Image 1: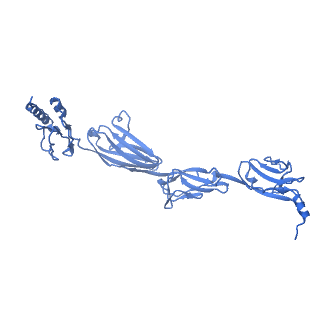
Image 2: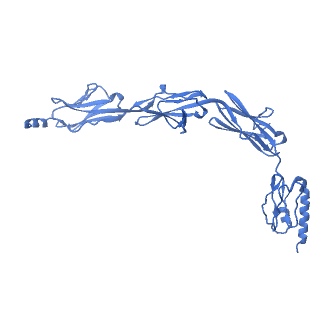
Image 3: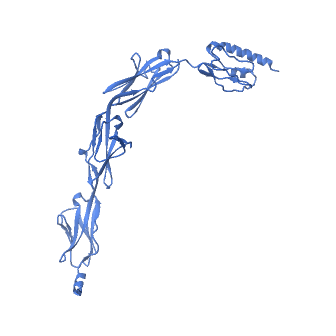
Length: 406
């Protein structure tokens, strides 16, 4: 079969599309541009048609549609551009560029309108307050095109204990927590994304109510007369508890008042549902020994804990004769050596002038005073032997100086 040369010449004389109409994707609210390029148009006319509704949008140089967002431009009687301003989801679909030949010639292009995700507030959970031990369900519904992917996570990045497993992310619109505990108390983020920026999230605060609980690091504290001491308590509660201290008689301790401000100082520090509280007792006296109670209460309950403050012996008073020796030795410098010894349960220091160190076994000071010899100035401890040690030290030093050549 041979082609008819006249048919070839006839085909060449007709308009032809120089290139296909590309499919385009536009985010809602932006402008769209569809291009139709026709060679050898001659006296034929180009029209734009909305395929799904068979609506004629433009013919040749004229816009037919009443849609004010649609306009037409052309260039050199070859390129014909359909403009759609501020596209809407309803603009999504096929558009046809056709030439009024017989038979009609046409090309189609698809306009895809994408929509970033948005949270549907009416179908999404708001902040919740629940009792510890109950079941909780958080819902999140989002819209957009393509359909958004929805997931839940904690705002602080911590793992979530869900169905016996610790996970960072829960896929889907529903977050279900069985037997919620205070450890679940946090802000949760519902995040929706579909590849069209920006992603969006909603913050849902979950608060878990429970009565106060209390722990005491040290239930028995010791202090000697004149010492400052700090008593400590740790509490957990939601709603936040009212915390305070009482004496063993039940009197509430209030700091910074004319009655107790000089003696007591209370302090508290909150971290989430936990609270640290302390009671500082300045210059402990005999009347301060006894029991102290830290109390925490909220609308769901009350708890307290007892701390007992006992008296302990004060550290043994330490007396040194170094300054006395230096003042009387006319410039002689003692060779100081730190040598801890035991006086009962306490250590004492020994000072010596050039010579071997004298060691005293633990308890050596229990039955009698150990006092300086000719070449050794030793620390003497204990109130009962203080005067004896001073006299002995002076006598020994005097004898030592007399024995030195002039």
